Image 1: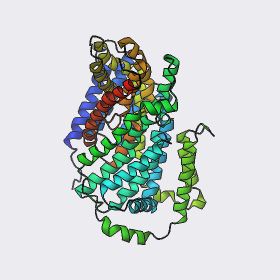
Image 2: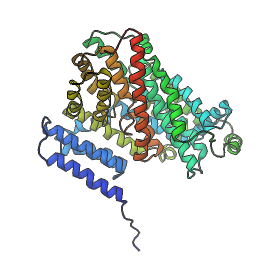
Image 3: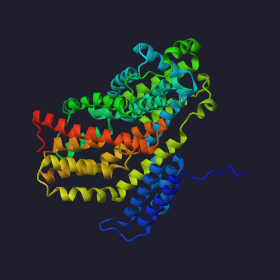
Image 4: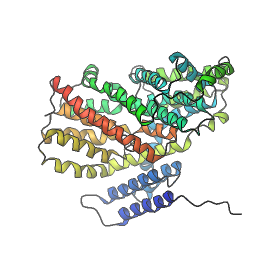
Length: 477
């Protein structure tokens, strides 16, 4: 008997289309203004996106194949093409994934979830979402965005673990997806622009404004300039509640399960205590980075993993390993590699030029800003690293402000903030990529959910923040 199954049509179409785009750009005639290597990198980027959207290949294979194609077709040296696999964010991600696995493979995640739901005195999904968001916001002022994601991914997994055995129910699927995408990915990203030290592009923009435009922004200045962006948090919760139809929903069976689970868990065990101690050490090191030590966040994550699996901690790696999302981790590395290559090859600048050049003939400042921001989102799509995004767009944004006659400070703040709210593709920003991978949401559904949210957030930033900055004496034009 032949047990093989035919490939889904979307996979077949995806493979044909992805390799067709790759070969047409790699072997086809040169595009005006684009260097051959940049054209090849652009073809690899389109291959990557098409494979992602159609799920044509497993995530890990896509992640490994992208830098491999950069080496073979783009003539990029191996250390450079695979450079992201030694990147700080890459190691921070595996720290997040392993800690999420610990929360799922031990009672610790469930114990934390039960404590949260008990403190909220409610099993309503909207109340739990609000409580986790408030905790997320408090932590968000202390940690970089990806560190915040690393902290909240296991906690959120613990909450969704309450529905284990009911994953097949449509309500459970909506609740799982909403909680993981929101708490693990979106809330950290929505709080990132609010605090100067919470998001890498914030620090990069402040530094380049000081050096290029002689504009100094203090921690307090940044907080004041971005004050209206706090209004995006209730907008986010309302959108998630509406999109996933969460109003009135409970965690399925929580009324019966919570008392039983509390009794079953018993007293906290030493491995759980040791895991919490190690996580606390990691949190302290993340908060104090640059003040008392120079250990980067990714190395802190690995240090925590070293501590947590020391023999006297009595956590067995073999029992945790099956819960680790190795494929998503490899995909993350490949996505960062590709984003770096897009920037270094000049493909990002070439893509942006198609949007930027026509803007010079337009007269209305808000029309220019709207078109520029959403045009930049097209070029920004493949740059998963926030650092790479900042490196690619911040210098260009500062120079464009001067060329187009805008005031540099408000123009740059608004533009870079908008690029931080980039959820059109699940690979467009690290925290959302991690959340998407953890949720198991199909790529097309993640794009549908993220696209409308991105549009709403960007319109809010352009309209509300420009008015606020004008009141502070920094008009846009």
